[in-house]
Length: 333
Ligand code: 13P
Ligand code: SF4
View 1 (cartoon, rainbow, N blue to C red):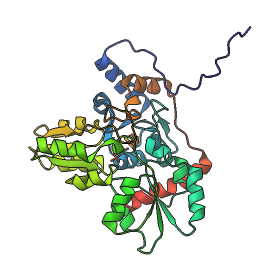
View 2 (view 1 turned 90 degrees about the vertical axis):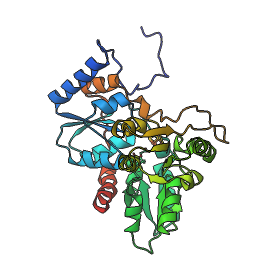
View 3 (view 1 turned 180 degrees about the vertical axis):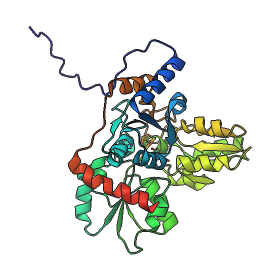
View 4 (view 1 turned 45 degrees about the vertical axis):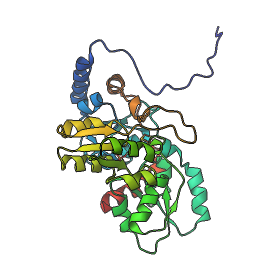
């Protein structure tokens, strides 16, 4: 007879079955599974260093989308966050897409619900929708063209000059794109909880300590932070800049995972991460890390490959509309 029903239990979203062996053995076992199953591991720069080391390809959102569209692997393991895995599935629907931990969401994607965007669109007939790639497939299905931090200016510049545009969900990115393109896009009021934490005061303090350092900031940072930055862009833009300006010091305002690839590819440079500060709104967090990106672990990658679970699938009715604005982005950038 059943005596207890654990009603609060829900799908855990990952498998953390223990592995017998050290990290090097685990990495070797992951590579072996990739070979046996014709799988490819894609990882974002914000994942932990050991994942970047075991991956077949690391990149920013744009490069990861391009890679997902072109790979001939049978299985894609997307080590990033859920919308990145969805983008892989939309671009390669015939492939199995695995996500090591389904709980790896994104505060920015969460800041725009499809039903809210639909309502806003209905209130603004005739407007085109430009959405940041950090959105759900359902939001992309309501979108005319997707952008990333790496191509937003280039894509928006190609839209008709008299177009009325809704841009979402990242307010800071949209505000910056309005500034550099002269557009007057209507901005969704969404944000990333990691990038919103960087404050101008923290950068001022570091600039006083490192007066010669170049300040780099991700376009998801607030306007006053971007105004202090010498280099503004996507994670790949920051890497590219540092790689072509050897021997310098850089103050880095983005998620700390990027330091692994910065340091690896620019050993003669010094990178100083901007410490986040507790915001006026009282958000208490003592790290400049995205906890969603950090949900990816070597053990979860091993288990997702071993058991081919959890997969990321998109409702075909949504997928047929959601893929179009991503393909349009790839054509325009
Ligand atoms: P990038 O496209 O610059 O890698 O940014 C992705 C992201 O999630 C930033 O928070
Ligand atoms: Fe989303 Fe922010 Fe994490 Fe990027 S850093 S994945 S925008 S929550």
